[in-house]
Length: 264
Image 1: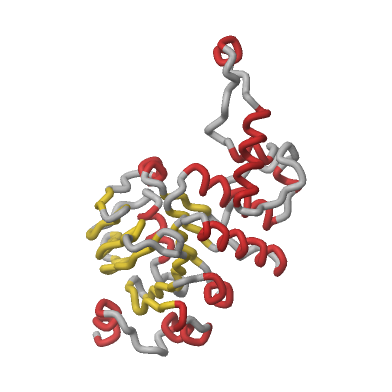
Image 2: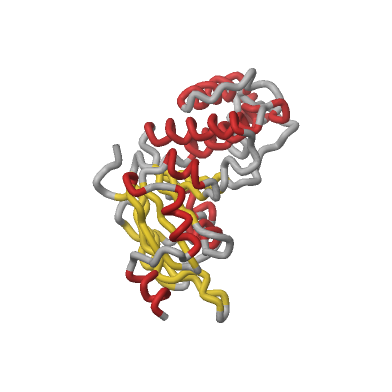
């Protein structure tokens, strides 16, 4: 169940690249334990917004709030520290390394023995234990956390990437087209992982072109068109035809910013 106060708040975010305005006064919330979809056609501004939330770009105007407090996400490291994790379509996994090694990539544990710590010996057993524990929370099944990542299915790799993001950040999970390169069964597996992530109280922002999946898993959907929010739809309003109408502009915008664009 979503909490009363939003974990993530986007407040009037605008982004300009020279004379091009990629985003204009974008405003929405994501609560804990809620999946919010972000949809729009190519060029709608989704990628730019994700980069702002991930600390890659700074907004030209407006700001981002975490738990109601304005936060300047000046770099990916700062966004991670704020509890925001982004899983991109191109997963940052090393195929030749083990599942546990990928899970702890950049956060490796060393043994507690003074000599081992001094020599940098990795505590592989503990990393494997924690990896199994984290994967089990999301009901992600892998044959063996010691096996190479290349042996996993596409759905299992997505599950690993999501579990890693949830474990190390734990507040807001941004998923950028998580099922685009997967088969039907693997897509279903990833959607189940997203639902499980919501049950753990994580705020999820899902970017997807797959409208059926958006309808199936999202609690609310924010529709972007030409850089502006043209609709925010509640669960009971979600339907593929409705979303497509707002995305393409065949349905009039229903937000103040979008209405300004539609009437200009």
